[in-house]
Length: 303
Image (cartoon, rainbow, N blue to C red):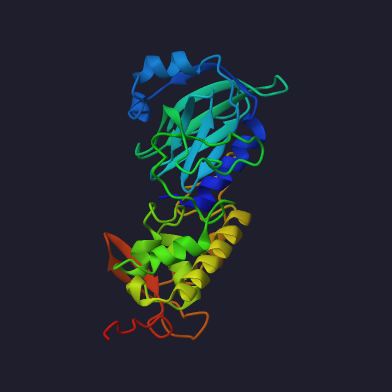
């Protein structure tokens, strides 16, 4: 699944082209990519045509384009979704499911292409509600959309790059969790945006075993882990995220290259860059955890 850096790369690219754009027409080539839209294909088309895209906003892994004070188009990338911005007549992108024609703020025509090989993602128009804390809903430096957030995203916690993220409060909450630390990092109700890749990288840097009980870790160490994870996310955003198997491309169809900087994730069998031990991969929660057994030891939690 795409994580914060991949979604932020898409968000920034869309914002560059689409803030202030007006939707002129829509072509649906596969209605399955609108399976989450409550009003179906006709409702999606009728509501979107003629609307103006006011901003492109992200919270954690979630992305939305406000259309009014009450409605927004939410993009779900799923396992293989891409949102590409193309000029009219640009070569066909395979697995294009939805094409949205717009005129940008200067009147130039553009195409937004939703491409999805596995059909786990999709687009949907959702209601906007006020955030529970009354603060700005998400990250969107180009256009402030205030405290309005799609109802389907409202339960998601703030992410580490959110200016309103309260690291101390989150660290205290993490220290009370009777779960392995990686499971806590992936809990989008505690902090959002981190998935398998960046959890493994952050835990490697913090020298923490993925199954170390979060309640056995001090608040100070949790604060250190949060800062490390934030720095990992910032570096990954700067490199366009992590792309594997030609997935998670930016809006120009280009892959990110943070995979070249990975220390733990995907490095099973390689030497640990820190101690020289062998990086291992262990099955975990229907996926895998990558770590160094030598410098990420599981410490006893017994009293």
